Image 1: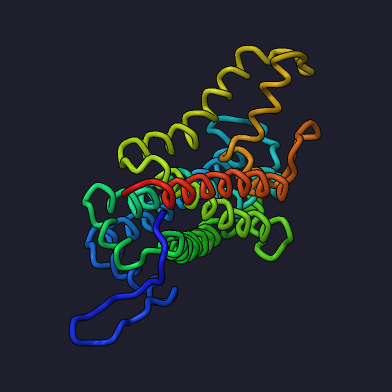
Image 2: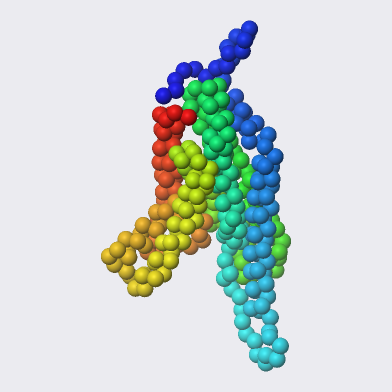
Length: 301
């Protein structure tokens, strides 16, 4: 177990202690000295906005088709009710989380596994023997990147969507309602917790390929497997036995629980509410980080 005071001894000079802020600054420099970082972050923003605006444009077109009489139709009576096609805030976070989350969880994994694969982690832990402080500094960098990147994506997507949906009544474009603020704010919290969860996986597995594979499996593949099983076996509106257990267990998966807060409405049979879902995702993240930090402190590099 590594112990001691974080410091650097320069020949012919005094010992310089590494404060936590200096550790954060060093991690920040590591991230942004790589040209790929700029490409990944820029690509994430552009991709998020592009997918969101494509979904919004599709909704606008759907309302146009629904309210436009077909050629040769003698009578056409169809009214689109306010908000019947959904909420703009929900469409925005769906677009931003569709692929953007995958790009950023890979980024979060690489923040730790790249150092193990290159051997740089030895130099890092030599300069700062208190490994827990190093990992916490990396967490701060990941969180301070994740929140603004997705906040910019959500804000720009909402502004673009509001312009596209001018005169459209099928989509609720309210921004200041409690539901809209909860959806967009909760999305930022959930996506940040997912990124930190994946960072925790990286500290445990240490392999880039293995960590990314495990992260994608837990966040993307596992909910799909549960969904397919429920579609096949949950034919009864009120299932019992192992099918009921499977249905309840699916709500406690990290992604499923975290995305509850981004839904405008909830099923009466749902176990988790919006903030309970965030709490479950937070528990997954905390557990993963505790295991990762413990193994990092106790294992050799």
